[in-house]
Amino acid sequence: MSRIFSGVQPTGNLHLGNYLGAIRNFVRLQDDYECIYCAVDMHAITIWKDPAELRRNIREVAAAYLASGVDPTKSIIFAQSSVPAHAELAWIFNCIVRIGWLNRMTQFKEKAGKNRENASLGLYAYPSLMAADILAYKATHVPVGEDQKQHLELTRDIAQKFNNDYEVEMFPLVEPLILGEATRVMSLRDGSKKMSKSDPSDYSRIVLTDGRDELAKKLRKARTDADPLPEKVEDLADRPEASNLVGIYAALADISKADVLKEYAGSQFSTFKPALTELALEKFGPIGEEMKRLMADPGHVDAILKEGAERANAIAEPIIKEVKETVGFLIP
Ligand code: TYM
Image (cartoon, rainbow, N blue to C red; front, side, top):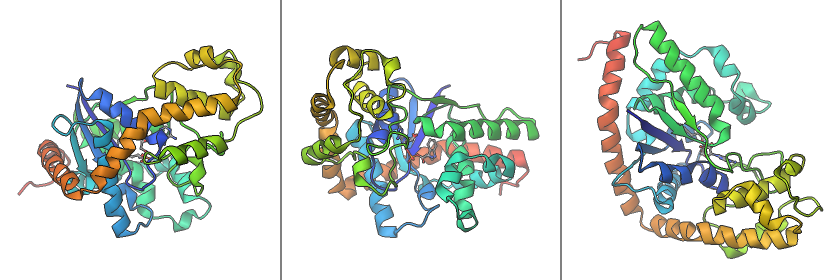
């Protein structure tokens, strides 16, 4: 049986990368799979967060899922902390995962920065909780952006080691689903850095709730080189900023980068950027509007999260029981 699990951190500033790399694919997969989509609030506190802001951001992630087209009557939408199996399985996985494996995680290195001694233990153990998120449901496929690939490889290693250590066939080896032309959207200010929620510059990212003015301004200011767009995709190889904008256009229009270049080869950015702005507005202007409407009605969003938590719990509970029995815990 195939089952999808994925999650987004409620850390605010949901951006175009989150949408094109992940959330849009969540919507597309729900007709073919049983889908479980989470706001990973326990991951969000690995770096201190203001509680009121966290509550708002959890609802924002749920609103983004709904506004993008995740259908709560088909897919499950819930908050991680409301299903105890995540934390329980994460502890068991903490005893499976090797410190050496965690030391290789690039996301930890980036987020902890130079002062590693001062990072939280939670930030270090983050990938173990992520493996628990997925495997608490024995999910088989995980749609994510490119940056999460290493964490999914670790999830496979944890599953494999658990199965070996306890001589069971408990956990599947998950397959990442990294789909589309924009699996790694880069910062609008620096084509060598990925677009991220935590970049201090608002001009580095397009957020889902940006209106016409913000969008137009951010794209106008987006860094580019001075050349017109080339004819061939290969010629974008050493032009990271141009390549990024062409990739965003391709993903939004649902065509290939080559097709974008067929239309825009020879164009200057002064022509291409306004076209991209119009396309972006058309594609996610309505999503931003719907998100704002949903955020103004937290009761509705909370009811969906509550029902989702019940459905998620019903799947995870028997699995965590089976895991506890396997490791030798007594089930009272
Ligand atoms: P997060 O919250 O950083 O990002 C959410 C999703 O958006 C993708 N993404 C991007 N895709 C393309 N270009 C970008 N610039 C970009 N930035 C982010 C991410 O790859 C992700 O799919 N660890 C995860 C959350 C998580 C999770 C899970 C995901 C926790 N448990 C279980 C899948 C399964 C994270 O920090 O995502």
